[in-house]
Amino acid sequence: MKILAVDDDPVFLELLLEMLRSHGHDDVTTAGSAREALAILASAAQPFDCLLLDIQMPEIDGVQLCLSVRELEAYRHTPIVMITAMSGKSFVDDAFAAGATDYITKPLDRLELKARMGMVLRLHDERQRMAVFQRQVGTLSYLMDFQIDFAAPMVIPGVDRIVEYLALENYLLTLGVKRLYAIGAFAISIENAEPIFNKADSAAFVDMLGDVATAIADGLKTEQAMLSYAGGGNFVVLVQRTCSIDPEELGLMIERGVAEFEPIYTADRIPTPRVRIGELVRGSIFAPARPTRILDQAIEIAQRGPHGKAGSRNLVA
Amino acid sequence: MTHLEQKSAADRSKSGVSERIPPSLVEIQARFRAMIVDRILMFEALKRAIEVNQQPAQALGAISDLAHKISGVAATLGYPHAGQLAAEIEQAIHDGNVAARSAHQTWNCIQPDLEALMDELESLLDE
Image (cartoon, rainbow over all chains, first blue to last red; front, side):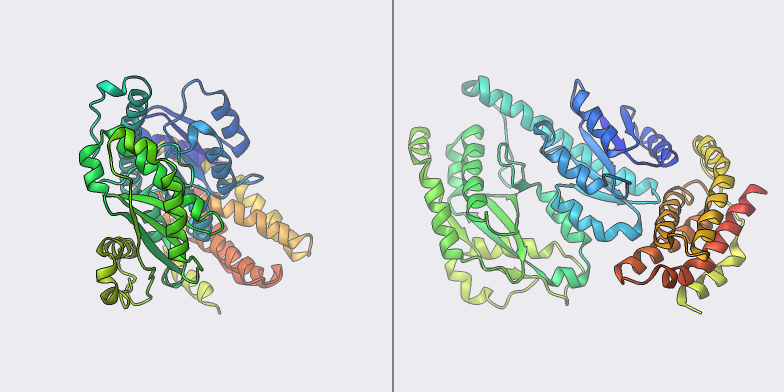
């Protein structure tokens, strides 16, 4: 795995390099500033597979660097792990909004670094699989035998506004009790995802997910929202607790967006996706033990549909 | 005496103690130690700047940057106490900025810890 590590402290970079080496990561390039990092990225013959960025750096900080990196086509979905001191934890929120995948804290802990890099490696492998998949879709789709796991979260190619599910979970885990209380989540479930999955080949299924994701992203254009695909035909959206999204209006917008692709679905002999929007689940200060529970609950409510609505109204994370 | 000051005073007895580190980090530790004198001198210069009211906010920022560098590596290189003091200084300056405290208010809060950190760094030179 090709790694770029950025920090303005050369001693920290040496330390990080040594620790990464001890975990078997030998292909590590270092940069002492955001400018140097951007120059390295621009001139790299092969793109990097993972970026480790210190948040607190002079001139251009790690969050700004993360934003700039995400604007580069080759790095839209590359895992980016932010490095922060405890005092910089308040910037982690901004880092996730800028597209970070995860973060680790200074001083480095061997086990923590190992765990984070293990996660990055899994993401990297998944990306490699997706890259192979995209190549196959582009060239030999009729020969394609690429298998995707229906239940697993995935990064949907070509949809920029979607964040990895793992990043969304990591984001929730960084929130303190107060900030967890300020957010809400709702899910958008493709009612007939499983029948579509059973009928379609992998490429057509992923294309269909991309259509729905684009329609959702368009519908949420004016909102501060984080969108992710959780697997099983379920999208989750993280919003402010006080958001003013009208589910009916959003549903209509998604429906209209998806309807544009109907001729393709007909040609592929798969049903047009039907979406169901679940009620907003709000974070609760009384259940901070597992912040990611809010996502499971949002999905559960969306899947349950109108019949479960009455019972789901009082449900909070 | 603030909480920070009490905590630092209590911890001061632990100073000058380094922990064993893996052999692969010994060279990096040596480089860190080689920078100690310069860092103490920089802290001294910044401290003087605040005391004579010469751009105290900038001096505090520079103290925070230096403390950030120390707190990021000291514990891993076998100097947990220096790392902890540096982290506390960094945190206190950050908190002062968030609370919009004046540079001198923040300075009063961090001064005991900065003195302790400089003592601690000095003691590491004797090892």
